[in-house]
Image 1 (tube, protein in one colour):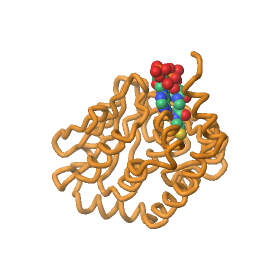
Image 2 (tube, helix red, strand yellow):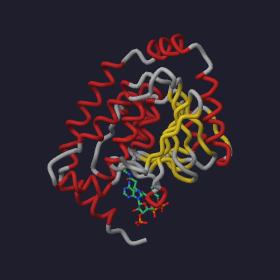
Image 3 (cartoon, helix red, strand yellow):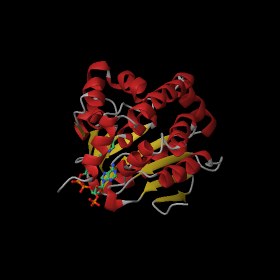
Image 4 (cartoon, helix red, strand yellow):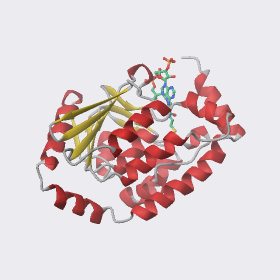
Length: 247
Ligand code: COA
């Protein structure tokens, strides 16, 4: 178990909060495992889920130190894939509370959410190519569908960041609010969804996300290539450069 992710049930809403502020909520394998379990084990009493971070940082992406270890030990750790599959197969409405930077998986997990609340100072970046990696979490499928190919290429491949307003215009974010209000607005939104008839919500969600097989296939295909990229010399060099950078 990791105490870097805190899971709390508030009535019918489960809150999954990444809590590693000193590393801007960069995700470790232990954190992925807790998040996976919290998604998978949400029973009938849980009718919506909030994924939250902290003030200033929603999530700085996967832990690059672990990327380097994985590269040296021959591949991606299974907890990452399990989390991606848990996100894809999750049947509960997901609300994200993005109170600051959202990097890598911090942004791509949002394509699996049903409602995203962001702070005015939130930024959305996917610097995969800078690390000699490729997009993951089925974002290579879901981002072009959501925001159109041109904007998706600029974000996913060119690594250009989006502001909260741009992310709203691109269809990733629903509401942009003051940083201090993000958690509250996200919880209220999750409660609003939780109060709707659960069976009808689940069915509507399934109908609207009707491409589950394609999403899971895309995750598997991306992971296959991601593993190779992870072990490439250019990726290892990029990881080492980040870890040894001078501030
Ligand atoms: N993996 C591991 N450590 C990370 C991390 C990550 N993805 N993101 C941030 N950290 C660590 C930093 O190394 C730093 O640790 P230190 O204090 O021990 O040196 C700490 O978190 C704070 O980060 P810092 O860079 O000082 O904060 P910042 O506000 O100046 O910048 C980011 C924040 C997120 C822009 C910057 O840390 C960054 O670019 N991180 C890498 C993001 C990334 O590429 N993620 C993977 C995408 S696939």
